[in-house]
Image (cartoon, rainbow, N blue to C red):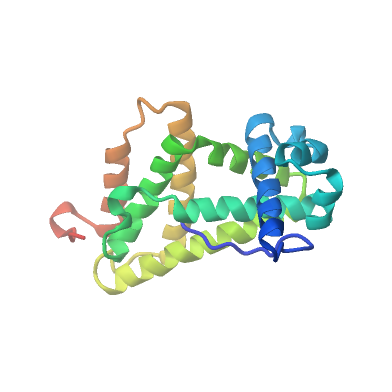
Length: 215
């Protein structure tokens, strides 16, 4: 998953080194508590205690709980953007490599850092009852889908992907496929056909095997 952070969080950005460290510790504490207890178990006093600060310090950096959750979303976005499958991360960029990275990143992240998805799913469930959080997550997903559309469009123009590709629909489908594969990997990691799944998605986008380009 490759998305750009969209939100500007909190009331104070922690311009001093100590302030930045405290703010980061509060976001990390909130992230960890959501992963461990779920969103319903998130309490500001517990966040402050885990971060090693008092409740007044928490409110100094985050005026509302919504501000703090924006900080958690930004941290999550940063981890999705930077925690990449190492086999492809250093290869020269091309539309085909971007697609492979897209698929393999999610599979790598679910193995190495399943708490990222625990937090994401908790936020998604909460957003069904919270319009403000839903708007935050929508911005994150729009940025992700636009990134996919960019490399799909470039790939179709370069003849890497099918010329008749409906880029918008294909990007939406890839988002849905990645989400679904994450759920399957969490539920049945030993039986999910990872390599065949990736190959089938690539085949769908590039066309028949004898016409498929190399990276």
